[in-house]
Image (cartoon, rainbow, N blue to C red; front, top):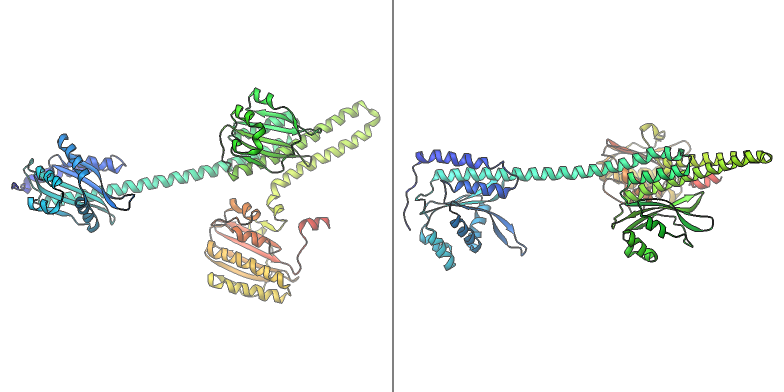
Length: 576
């Protein structure tokens, strides 16, 4: 092969600086590392190298590691096309060279490439002839390494066309450029990951704000709906609120009359043709739970009305029961002109709206009945006393219905646990601490058994029946384990009141329990998720007499109480 002289170092220094400055300009032009690397490669083939190729290692679907050429450059477009075609023909030898540099993190520098070197490294005769025809004289392969990680390799080649070979100074320059390129690639990767994390956080925040907005709208609308005195205004307000809370395409209120026939009382978003097609029907029982139909074509219950629904474009339904005057005599239907995946939050908010609507309609209808009776009283003077008494009764029922609705909104969690669960807003809401029976226990995984033994000792001291003592120990184990696993440990103390009631205080300084999941944890057996009491909480509520819970970002306090004798359920106490 021809011999070439290296460039004089003094003459090359300005050129090196120009190359370094030009390549460095490309680092911050794009977050796409392939685009940046191609621009760097293009800059290096003008006065520094004849060929530049950048490769990174990929794991193929067959499990083999292959070199993926991210950039190839040559000043001559025809030679560039030739080089890209040659890169596709390269086999294991080229792959091994790239992987060797990536594995060792060391540059490979060949100031003079001889024909013997090419013949020894290339086994394919046709590929060897291609390499020989390039008249290669110098080769450098430098790793792109940043923060202890090698991202790829930059290969630089000079040929007889440029009449130059690489020097040690050229190698230093190439290694500097490769390191800068690696830092730029890694910075771009970190920025992309940070932006993706921000996007995910913003989506989560948007969902939280959406839920908060829906609940706020529902709470704000409750007083105005309950206070409405005209059924037409109330129904209009319910439909308007529904449109603000949900993204259904249409809504309808259905009522079952005294004759057992279902009729559409009001609607929004449905075509006149569809409304006319909804002839009164009878014989269908009113639902008592939400009916979720995510695809009407796949639900057998929709078969009789499938063609009519298709004509309206309806593909999904959410049917909410309306419990009016204590009976399920109405429904609130959401129509979707697309298949719909109903999320639990959406169903719960919709059910709350249905309950609110039912209570408000009951109140308005009682009020309208009151007005009717008042009008009759004006016409029937002889029956005035009876009408006044009836008016008093109806007004009392109307007030009772309104009070019942407000109590429902305030005490729902307490009611579903039969008064066992007391959610505390401040430490002042916790029960008075009884006399400590034994010294407090610092809770870690190894000391949970010590707290259980203290509970057993206290149970024996107060003559607690064996089965109730075992229930108390079970509840103590569940809450103590939750404090250790999710709260990072804490303290536990067993106390005894003068009346013999056992108290167990378990406190931690963790991040608190996710209150959004607490209703599911109390109502649904087997529900569990990290950061909540989950299944264990359901078990605790079914083994002790009372539970006080105070939780927040600075920690959680759980107080368990167990009487000597099992108290009557709340409904039995009310009967008594």
